Image: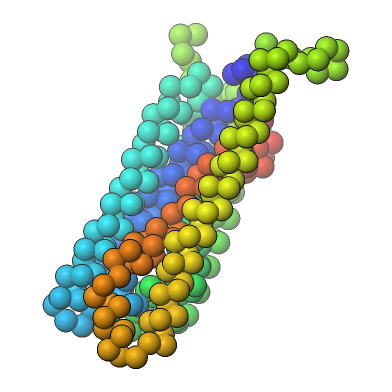
Length: 167
Length: 100
């Protein structure tokens, strides 16, 4: 089966990159926006953190959000490990980092559309409500996806970089 | 060893395997549809209440709706998981024709 699908190592690496990108995208959003800048929490649109109990409540749901991003990163690590075991896997940083950016962009797009615009569970800058920053967030998602795809397409051809497994 | 479909009918085992794959694929799409729709619908229903309900009712809802909150947390997850799975299928296009 493997010999019929040249380049599936690149696909596996790309998939691992996308999963890692989604997980890391969640971590960046959680750490930078929720904790360092404190401009929103996961449910701050529904439960404005104006009292200590509301802040505690938001902290719990931020923790569950981080648990999801941790799981997604774990899936990415497992996929990367499995990709590394494949005979045709290419050691290509561009494919992995491009996949990561692609995943990051997908995270921004999906999370932005569903959480910011459809459900309104939070907005990028909560005190402003729906603002230009929500659209900047979506735009950054599109940009990440475009740059990610460009990076992957610009990667060296896999046959030159194939790992030597006992060859 | 791939079966040559132009010459002989596919062996029974291979046909069964194809049928099983088709069934799994269809079931996966059905599960994906439900997985996408349910949390989104549940959480969206909550936004209606949160927008329209009286203050007292809203306060009550805010205190007692962990399932709705979990639905909101879970709403983007099926699409994100699906995008990871779909990467394998879209890889030939993303990579630019090198992976088939």
